[in-house]
Length: 636
Image: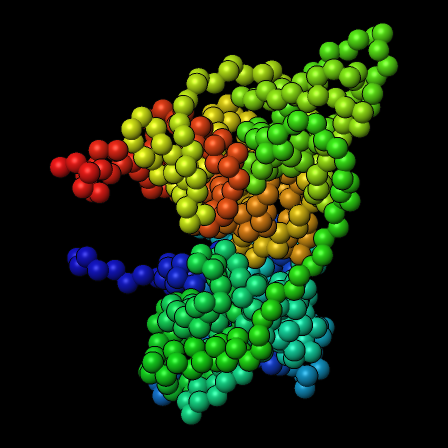
């Protein structure tokens, strides 16, 4: 007996389903594409439990007659193509005839459909690849699919599905692409009874961007409209000020079909050179219209890849389309005046204004004498630039005696005067209260001579017959990281609450990553929660990063979590602490005061056997006095 077996229909259908139906989002993609091909102007998608148990897709398209409703569940049954020649000019989104057959093989599907010219509609039931029933039904014009219990007969596949919120995020991402690709169609997505996405179908791409990305991005978009002999590029691209830490807000379409193309991505980002900072990526929604005979989309089961017969022409068209949009008008950043607390010019004590607070804690101790009349004393302690997490304010009652402020590793004294007010500008977002803490032991004496800062980047000092040059960013990054690492080891990364929560707009995939890692993100010092419309509101941040662009830092953390899903948890935490430490560190080309230089150097010299930042770059380099004198020919 031979070894080669002819597989029965049930097994072969399940194998085919594995190529097309990977998760609930795959079902939504295939069925919505069918609705679009049917000429629908309104498409509604409703899911429950991330689509794992229930998906309903309703459209007002052309519908099907009864005979087609049954045949549609057979493999390679399609109305899109008839012969091999049709593969050279595919205008529809679907064409292989595999989707409905694959979906029916791994779920229970109810199909309700009716053409406008028919008096009665059809209800067809397919379960596990078999047609269970086919009856008349009173239904409106168009087609509705109800898909239930996905992978009920393939339990091995169910084990690979993610949390419901994650699967729902994948579906939201796909629906976002449909909205951006087809402004002429009204889409609606409902998840567990709540409307998640809606587009009006008025044909305006800017309104679609507003629907999925929000007002801030919609107002920062520029129109793209560029024609060549072979290609037309239309859509919107963002100003440089709207750049993001990842590419999740980039959507590229070929003949209104969503695709992923490294070549198109390169063309767009090349056009943005000198427009955005390194590490940032543009927002772009572009549709490339091209003769279907010049492309091949039949190269992958998901139809996300495309081959162009002339890639260089497409590259140049996309590049010039984006470049023309960017340079058509000058993008001048708007300066928004922020409210500040009025400053008062008052006599101050001998308090050193550049006092450094390494931790967001301080303790005020006052030697009270009951016989003396207390004088109200208002103390505002301001941290310098690279340690500035907030401004601390405390009103105290004390006599005309020295008032001692004790902070970790630092003791300063204030002489109470007649009007002892030290006041600086207070941040509009508020200030935390001063917390009680126990003073730490005194630091060991470290002697050095500060020479100064060069190129607003490097600090030069003299010590023990050698000259040391310190990279201020690398040094402060290492100090931040060591502090965060110690806090993480104690399972307590100190957070600073925000008086006003910061809303971060995320893509659907980013929101899914957040949902999967919410507790882990909290362990890094962030407190955040969903805020509707693919956004989260951030309530608190790690103390070290309190002065950074909170939205950018948060999105970058989410991006890294999404890109390194299989990483060991300890390695993941370490890498993300690197990121927080780096973002919170002073930058190159940043002038800092002499007191700040001195404090930074002192802390760096206390590092035990460490001379690199977390990314491996050196913190300091040295040159001995002897080597310097040799170079100047003072000695041989």
